[in-house]
Image: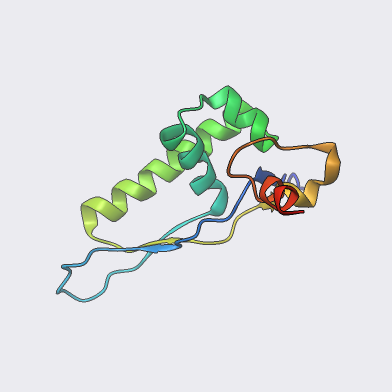
Length: 120
């Protein structure tokens, strides 16, 4: 029997979910689909500069899982750039920080839960 999938903790959903070439005059190729947790790992590691261990702790999974997700995400980005395919961010096995309750208080700047708390 297959092992149940573990939800990864994500602070916020991406504001833009579709990226693509502007000068593609050829027939539209298939889209490359990136999951929300792949986006979150790229955001945390490449944009914010966190290492795999920090990313794993924030998302509530093992470091080896982060490494696999990161490798998959980078291959998808490369496929999109090299082959002129649109990149779509959707789906995955994730929950927002706010869905984990107070058990996992997130103090990250861009966190969905934190921004709700600051508005109150």
